[in-house]
Image (cartoon, rainbow over all chains, first blue to last red; front, side):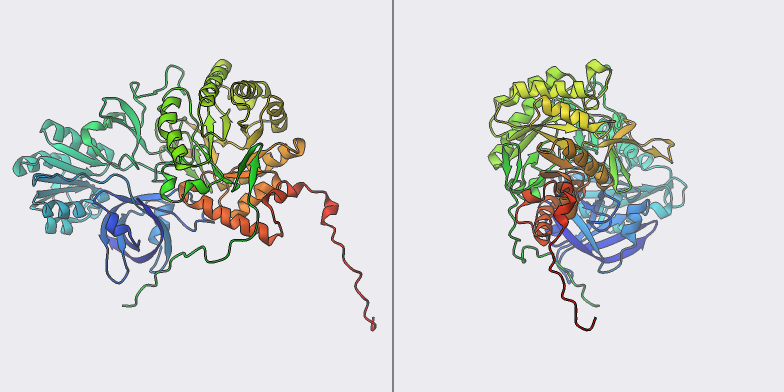
Amino acid sequence: MPIQTRGEVVTVRRAGAYSVLTITAPGVPELTRPGHFAALAIGDLNTSGLLLRRAFSIHGVQSRGIYGGTIDLVISDVGEGTHWLLQRRRGDAVDIIAPLGRPFALPREPVSCTLVGGGYGSAPLFMLAEQLRERGCRVDIVLGAATEQRLFGVLEAKRSATTVTITTEDGSAGERGRVTDQLEMVMERAGSEVVYACGPMGMLAAVSELAQVRGAYSQCAVEESMACGIGVCMSCVIPVIGDDGITRMVRSCVEGPVFRGERVRWDDIGTVPADTLGAPTAGGH
Amino acid sequence: MTRAVVRFDTGGDLPAPNVDMTATLSTFEMPSPILTASGCAAAGRELDQFFDVTRLGAMVTKSIMMEPRSGRATPRIAETPSGMLNSIGLQGPGVHAFLEQDLAWLRERGARVIVSIAGGTTQEYEDLAKILRTQEGIDAIEVNISCPNVADRGQVFACRADSAAGVVASVRRSSDPSIPILAKLSPDVTDLATIAVACERAGADGLTLINTTLGVVVDTDTMRPALAGITGGLSGPAIKPIAVRCIWQVREVLPDIPILGVGGVRSGLDALELILAGANAVSVGTTVFRDPSAPLRIHSDLAVALADRGFERLSDAVSFAHREPDLDAVEVDEPEVPEWL
């Protein structure tokens, strides 16, 4: 059950090309599981001209301490809304709804898990790594980004994983190339049975395919633009195959953001595949 | 380190103003004039996590069609100044799944319900009305006629008086006579009053004013339209003056028709503005995306605003902006002229 609350900014600190916002959210840490996200309103609820909430996966939570429950969100200054958020200072109010969405499913057995993050998509993976290790799982992490500045959480990864593999497209850190260039080797070495991934759609598609080829399960958290984050606006839909084998346009915010990789029709995202339930017939709708 | 002050919204400390907030749309009476808007609240389950949906005037459900419908490709939304553009394409589970899952839940929850229906042909609307006739727990039907008419090269029903009236007449004929029918009109017409009058003559018990107004956003990075559907419906505070204008114009020609006002409401004063222009009740739409608990806040703020203006009943404020100028004349005793003048 999500909570809507008026959060107060505790800190905004730089982390490479990104910033980490710590904000009070009483009651939220206790409910949060890895993969959950928060939806933040931009500006004052009654006067702001920016109407759509911005969604961020929850990077970390502190349930006790002097602020009485805070959450950490990783934010990239890419537009007017995120820019406003990053200009907030200690004590400023931001309306927040969290935790939202369907979190990562955790294995019941202590199996080997590989975690893959693209850019700041890695934000939810460290909380996940911690919980997997508590269950006795082996955890290997692969982080990739365009440049070293755009990696997120390398130090945290080193604290929580058996091995950490870094890739950058320009070679400024780790191996030159993409996470998927290294993933097969990492999975082989670790004998991984489950892959958890969060990042751009293209990366998720490649990770999901590789996992399937290797007979591993994959849990992918998608980054889809949302207006409300709570399941009423129907804007964040992607084509997903259900238990009955039928493809439906499914809301990323409530049925996701975490999906089983093999259920998502990655190549068809941005379209309505012809065999989708209720797809337009000739003439369209 | 100084400790941050954590403030909480307490709310509910002030005594509720003594204003009768009863609202009526034809024969449907509600304890609150604040409703959700079709397409902005799904079927209520999601919002019930944030507030008790039985406290709403009514839940207006997302438009339902006969068959399941995937809706359009993404991107489906774009943010605009004080608004948003959407092209969802009436995604929905079809009427049978709606009755089994959504209406059943609303009924069990005890919410008042206005079911919105949509169709590609007049026959589809009629078939939907006949199916709804067999159901309990429906307080009114809203007819979304801003849908492409398959028989008219995809022109929406709402853009012509004859096609709009045709749908309204067949839904009225096929529905339980005790259930009010509201026709939801589009502002994208040359002469809204004519279409409103045609709908009223065709048997509409009330009108919902307004649906979204069409727009296009071009993405300056991709240099293509931002929405997969190219055109989309503009909503949010940006369109409030258009909603007020439409309500005003229709109220001028139809002094007694029940009007459910909708368009850009995010505060109690916004709701009051629509009511003063002629709305008997008000739907909160896009604001719910931003602030899911807004409907109850707007209800309380509206009650305060009415009390501040000396209204004892919400119904006395309906259309108040249309009053004759001489009603503002206040009798003032001649001031005594001081002796020294």
